[in-house]
Amino acid sequence: MRSIAGLWRWRRNPLCRGTDRIEGWLTLGAVLLITLATPTAALCGGRAAHQALLETVRDQHRQRQQVWATVAETAPPADSDPEHGSGYRVAATWTAVDGRTHSGTVTTDRAAEPGDRLRVWTDARGELTSRPMDAATAATHSVLAGIGTAGVAAGLVEAVRRLAVRRLMSRRYARWEEEWARVGPDWGRADRAN
Image: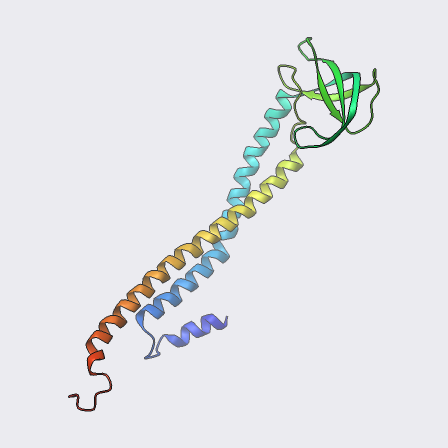
């Protein structure tokens, strides 16, 4: 509020240059845009991301099925491998929805013995895949997308304001140079003519 009052006082100040007024109005406009337009951008970005992610959720739930896998043999506990996650690796076989039998390495969070049954997710070809995304995860990602959109919108407004202020400053310095070139040679001389 103090900055708005300060901007109002500068209106009639004889020392205030036109570029100072423009810079003040640019700052006020940027603050208003960030305050009003950023939440709108966040809402629009979050909503668009939510719709796209919900479509992904529907697609993944249509394309992925959970089937039973039977443990054939166990392996030592897995290290923290980003590809397989942490836990126990077991060789298992499973029958896909199309009736074909598949086999592969399954990572589980508990120790399993040969003959144990585990639930695994498979794709349309019967290959192992990750669990489908749920609606709560989509909502969380949508909120993060909205926050990111708000940050980008605010950053864009501030970047445009800074570019405009930079141009104003270069124009201000150019005028100072012109004034100094005109007044500078006579500066401080007692015998200069008025």
